[in-house]
Length: 302
Image (cartoon, rainbow, N blue to C red; front, side, top):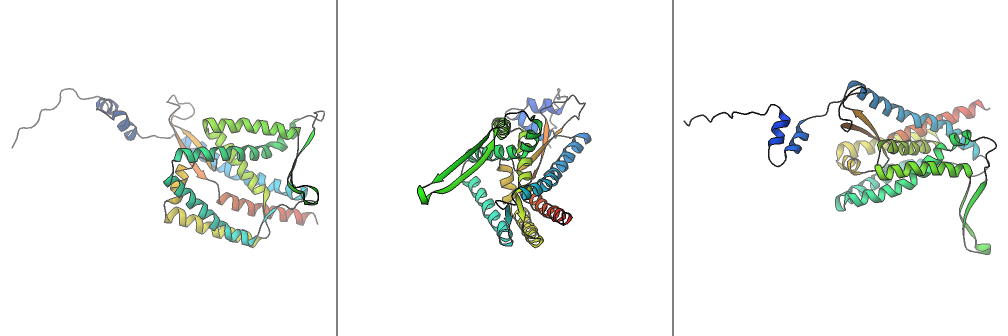
């Protein structure tokens, strides 16, 4: 039997020192070993905020959907989801999801996310502008010079002239667009979680406000189809998880949990992000709540 090897005289006093003294990947090993611990108040703040942000667009979207229906009573009908649309939605969503999965597998994630960021920048600015327009309009005094404008695009001439776009807006709408563009540039440059959540709330609220079900059975078809969709793609495959982790767009809500709590003196850069996909479940439930609220308002008016 060989003699026992001598014990080293100097032993590092802590794990970080030992990892830092190792050659090559000491810092990587330290990051992998030292685990992040969130405080109870930070966890409560994050999950409470996520719950609040989930209920906020459903509540206000249902209230604003009544105004949307009344404003379009004498003119253009609001966008309505039929039973056929509800049955096709899980199929279309599945094709879109699997297409994104293939894109992330075949092409560079950096360039795909760059294109998606530009796309959602435009959509987010428009959605946020529409969301904050009632609030901004109530802030301006009556003496504010609010001039009307009209954006009109037509195709053809004479009797063959066809209207492609006819959008009316005013000065207050331009102010809302300017404020939303500031948030959009902030999101585009920094990808900050607050800008991401503002766009996510705007998408959610606009979806509940502007999309309407024609009856309750359509809502049941939509909920049932999305239930099968979620179970298959989340638990049956890794497609949903892969896309959610690779996809950098405001279709997820983020909330940062501070490591040391509100009064802590730890490194403020050490955070944990909690995310939740808001694309399907909230919208279908919110639209169903919106339908129930519109029905209640209709009954109370007779």
